[in-house]
Structure formats: structure tokens, C-alpha cells
Image 1 (cartoon, rainbow, N blue to C red):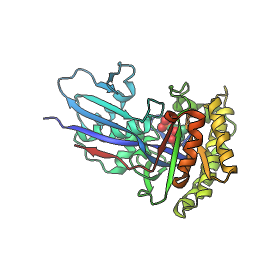
Image 2 (tube, rainbow, N blue to C red):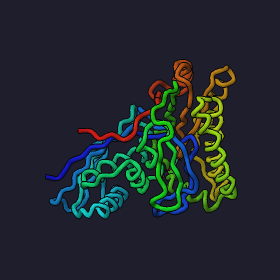
Image 3 (cartoon, protein in one colour):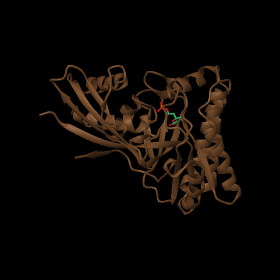
Image 4 (cartoon, helix red, strand yellow):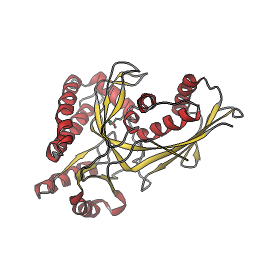
Length: 325
Ligand code: PMV
């Protein structure tokens, strides 16, 4: 009997971003990064290897993917087959749990869950470091979603030395992330394309590497000290400096839309009113607002007024990868 394994992994939001690869094949980043795993958004993925299959079968949210759509998953399964000396194809069933039908599903939770379920279904017993290295081959940010809480990705220099490490796994700090869904559609420029263009064409890229080193050095002690202001200022400036790479690339591009700028303005107004909150955003227009739990009601009230209740989702620190029976 072939084992059927289901794994659950949560998404993460980078506070100090990964933006650029040193090795595009192995997905070795140019710099380290640091994230917070979130409880509200996760992926459940079930994998079984089956000798009767004539190709890998992949379905996401009940929809069967075409062969070309499933290429990334198929390539990833090939890695698992190589590591385990399995030869059969696999059936992969994946469900993204996102509170609204809205652009927050991520490759981080998807590839971390796939790494867990596929490796175990293939008979491999990987520790979390090895799982993090495997998840990295699917998507860089998945490296960090193997762990809960605050997670650092050590850039390393080769396959063995590039993996996630829990920084503070059990977060005993009343913080929250208010996610604003400003555009539910798929991004037009993938993070893969976007970061490569930044590395190759932005004259600011060398400065970015120094910024990340400085931001990691600033944010780590601030997290340990629960210094909300330093963490907030560091994550907001880091996000804006990452997005400056997109504007300074050639051809230039941006992940912002009009609502992104409107929401940034609201965060500044809230701060001026004495509510400490800071924003960050990844390769898309949806803003994530980092705040303290006591301020969640005031923030959600303000953002609900601006963007509608369905587009405001409150998340808290979430757990690492889990295997479900
Ligand atoms: O994992 P990828 O290839 O989708 O890249 C993620 C890039 C950012 O989300 C923008 C930053 C990060 O560190 O997660």
C-alpha cells in the first residue's frame, strides 16, 4: 500500500525581504531574510504515489491543472523522486484556505505543504532543516513556511547551507497583521521575473544587499526585546526599499495600485493619531499592516470603512508545518 500523506503549511509575510537569487536553479538567495508565519492563510496538500498513474495529477481547490500549469509541481516531484528513488507518478490534491476568495494564497504555503506531503509519501524521513531546503527548491519564501512564528532564512552559498531557522517560534507578544485585499487577481509580473530583473538592471541592487544586512541586524534584537517601533520602522522601510528596486529596474514596473497608495496614506494618518502601525507588501498590491492586538478594533474599523469588511482580514502568528491524519 502506498502511503497517502497530508501536510498543512501556513503562509508567511517577510519583514526583511528576499528579493533576488544568487543561483536561479537551486534558489539560493542573494541575502538572508526574516518573516512571520501567519495563522489565517494556509494550504493543505495530500500526496500519494501510485504505480497505475501515467503522469502526475495535480488539482488545486478542486480544479485539475493542465500539464503546463502543473509544470512547477511536476519538476518539484522529480526532485522528490530523485531523493527517494521512487519512480511512480503522484496524485497531488491541494486546497488553499484563505478567508475570502482573494489573492492571498501563496507559493510559500503551497510548496512547504507539498514538500512535507510528497517527501513523506515517498518514504523519506526529513528533519525540518532538510524539509526547509527541499521547500526552497519550489519557491524561495517556502523555505521559511516550514517553521512557525519569526523565521530567518540563512542565505548560505549552496544547496546544503541555504535553509530556514526558527528565530522565535512560540510568539509570546500580542501582535497582529491586518491584511488588506486590494486586488484579488494574479500578479502580472511574477516574483521570479521581478526579482531577476531587479538583480540584473537596478543600479540600486548593491545597496539593497547592505540594507538587508543592516535591517536583519536591527530587527532581530528588536523582536527579542518586543520593541514594536523598531520592528515596525524596519519592516516598513525594508518593504519600500525593496519596491524601489522595481521602480529603478529597466523596464521599470510596480506592484502598487491606487488603493495600495491610499492604504499607505491611511496607515500614516493612523500613526499621526497615535496608533502604532506599519505596512509591508510583497510582489502584489495587497498591504499587510503590522500592529499590536489592542489596536486591531480601531484599525479594522478604519480599513473596513475604506475597503469593505470582506477585504480586511486579521491574522496572528501561526505555526509551522503539520502532518494531518
Ligand atoms: O518565494 P517567491 O519566489 O514567491 O518570492 C517571494 C518574494 C517576496 O514575497 C516579495 C519576499 C519574501 O521574502 O517573501
